[in-house]
Image (cartoon, rainbow, N blue to C red):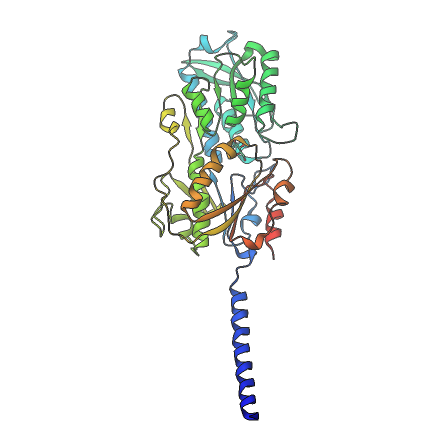
Length: 402
Ligand code: BGC
């Protein structure tokens, strides 16, 4: 009897120790937040003044990437689109007061955002008004070929377009500014240029918008494309939000599936991934910035019909991928581009790629509006971040430390 009891005890100890081992193995296999995929999108971790990339944030772990588009190239495309338009324009019709000068006003957007800076620079360089700075009001006299005649170009005014609540890229601020410009500058204004469609559409909302004055935006939002087709907006640039949203999710998917090295930015991009999905538009990888970048395309009346259908990418189909939970932040729920263009694309592609998104949207001015809901981090498999300020990377990574 005593022997049986001892044997039972020994057996019990053995079983307990197996359980204990199993338990500790399971604990070790739980991925810590600091080792999970982290993808920044649309607002590249960078210095708001110098635009230098914040490589410390980008090197947070080997699963940290940025997905965006070629910002500098986009500024060049926008500038070229305006120059091409002027080259075909009738000088007598476009120079409204006949003073031989093409006067333009410029909506900048966010002086601390590298997309905004790249566009200001691209426009000023194309028109010869670049004076070495992307700041509001810093421009020199330029010149352009207008229908075969070289004419002077002057930047009459430029403004950041900060809302009364402090938010950037603010369309209402653009409506107000346009109203004032139309009153104060009258027919000196021959062109209106905006670094995004939200502000361009805001300008067109001004009740005294000078009828027929050409106006350019950026983003190819649905309402802007319709305005181009209707002849109200002259041109915009597509930064291919659809491809960027799909690329953000594809990068997360690849990392969640354990891909490493070049597979992270080739599978589903330059070749099909294991589920047979492949994003159709070009998305290029910039190794020095750990960035996947979509291309830009000028959109005018000549090609707007190709984009108006809003068709999604047929290269992405329903997959059998295991469902993973991703926490995604958006800096401002009121941002026209993100809410009307980017987020609908994310919501379309996420279920196809087996990604269950939890979206947190901020107020566009305080990082805390996103950070306060960047919580419950252990329940997510990966994170996708669109920061309020481009230099807030460490505020997010520090939360993932443990
Ligand atoms: C877009 C803007 C948008 C901003 C938000 C830019 O790339 O062109 O319209 O407001 O991103 O970060």
